Image 1 (cartoon, rainbow, N blue to C red):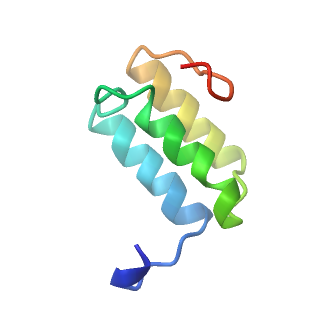
Image 2 (image 1 turned 90 degrees about the horizontal axis):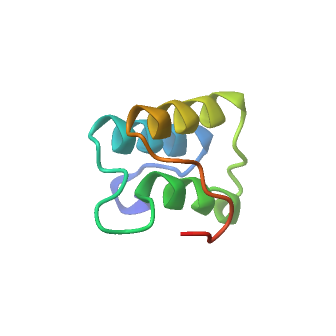
Image 3 (image 1 turned 180 degrees about the vertical axis):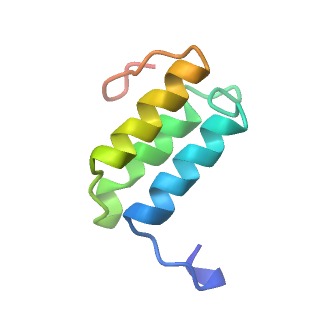
Length: 73
């Protein structure tokens, strides 16, 4: 992302999670793509806020996927 001049912050991560959920790419043969993006936030000093949680939970429910804690895939 940085190579395109896009800084990783809470807005970019929330937007990525929203896009993944809306495109129904939540499962792409991996444990959970949206949750993987969510889990990467902390390692880039972008702590989730209420909007991020809302987008993630709404997207997972929209796709019929449960919210998994940690690495319970």
